[in-house]
Length: 281
Ligand code: PAF
Image (cartoon, rainbow, N blue to C red; front, side, top):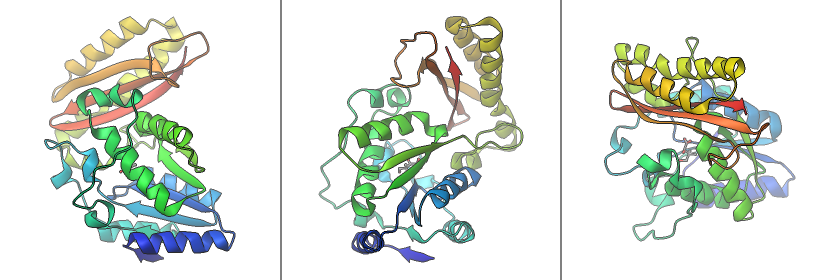
């Protein structure tokens, strides 16, 4: 497995593989890899001749009051996990490699990026689209694999690929959960044992909504209220949002048969966790 740190070298490596006729699968990450990331790597491995994983804690997707400086890092562990998954290249650029001191150009999603997470994190998605566009420009992958846990991010990336004419096929893989239901996330590391236990309210509310949707139909307003109450009554937990939205548009417009995304963002202590499920209207 090769470790590449420079933009020039990753571009050259990717072009050489393409000239040889090899397809490239790409998994962008911010490191501190868990089984959720590894499921994305396995998908990329199954689809492509060569697999690149990037590890870059992207400063532009963090607001000044967020956890950029404390974001968990385990580079040695990440490299070991990538090696075990037969990854061909891990791209670990330094911040200066990706952003010059004069950086001033961003890729912005005009509408969807302002909904859901965009309400509390108004600059987050422009950071995500900008870094993913830069990585796609360097690597030009055939496939790029993202996780359904970041459902809004996945939709925004698909929109970016369509709108800016990237040739990369975007693959979305299911959420990977701990045995007790907690969605895997690098940020789970911040939780104390008590918060970790209380954080189960997210997956429990999603299960509850899935059952209620089947049992009673589509009473979204009542379900939304009930879920907010359940989370609000759980110690350490504060609702950021609980939203039922159209999975394709993220709007509140549904017709029977549409896929409905139930998306949650909850502060557990000071850690903001997200989770979601998809229901049929
Ligand atoms: O999902 C993530 O970890 C990040 O948002 C991504 C896609 C690697 C961009 O920094």
